[in-house]
Length: 482
Image (cartoon, rainbow, N blue to C red; front, side, top):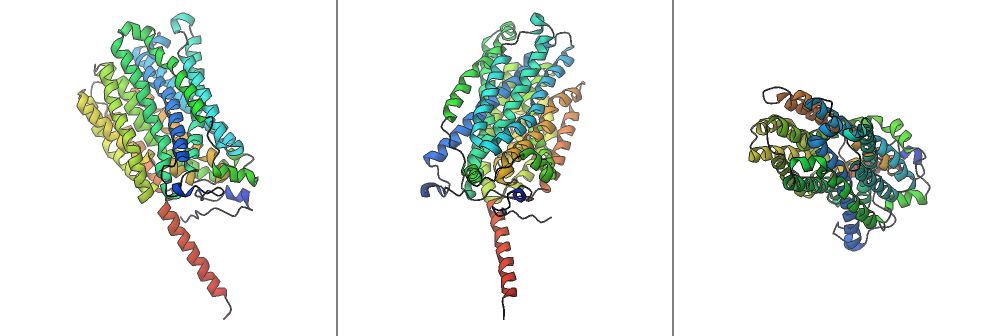
């Protein structure tokens, strides 16, 4: 299936949004300073990348701290009339609501990003998520206010997801649209390190509280502390982002009045197939990540009698390694292309899910950690490059909406249901092989979706551009008078 990656002429703005797979053109105006033209860490670019990393770290801290609490304490506190299994499923149900809200958030904030700029998205999404997270820590338990407790929990989780749905698109475009073409994967990997940092902060605090408090203290009030603490980094993130500059791509669109009037409608009308493919492609990354960081935490503590502190430590080691290798893999994406690494990541996930379950079943901390590391390395092999890959698939006028909705659609398909489905499949006396089969199936579906997407890396774009120029030259020579 041939695809023309080159952007259309500026005079045909509506057609630009319907071009099959455009790539990010070189930013003009303004051109990056000479000292940064090769992708070096100039002060302006480094400040932007740091702001993106800090913002995603804070927002994912807010999102992950809820997942850890859902695995450990929310079931008995907010669904006490349920059986232990039903309570865990109900808690994971409220966890899944956040994923359902994320595509809606990406549509709302994507509209803002494509119409009014990437910068307002960064501020509004961070503020919404931070306020909702602090409020979760203030919700009384079921024993105090009855059914109002889980209803409030559900509402606040929805608001968390709404804010996070807008965060990714704004943060990624902030770095991608400022980055030089041949180092876009590297610079775009900064916000992709944010989830690992946020997870380590959230679970590090949970681990410290779990180790220092009694079970009664942790259940009574200790679990609330990480939610209350979210207010401090949210304020710091707002301060850091207050001076962030708008991206050159959006400034060029605004200067020529080529912004989309209804970005979401244009995405659905002209890119529905691309949207479904990217959602299906990214599903495995979400499924694997939340199987490791959320489902396994609940399963090991409830079924294998592994200590809560031990499990948190094992998962944190794996996530730390994931964060460290993210920029290294992103560099490979700039050199060898985005899609090859995505296909390799899917293949790793497909072959590693049964070993993951087998290693988890041993309940040995070292072996479980090895299983978690293998799974997350497969996941991050894809997700290290998608921050550059997804924006390159959409024209600038609809890029914030298209990339964010596609990314968060993958969260619904892979992240929302995985803890619930895995918990249901894991019931029984033997190893939860059903979970391994489920995750392997998602990996294979994602592999097919990535195979149907085009390559957008620098080498592929240059190769297609050379072919187009050669074709145009040949046509001109043929038409020249003899």
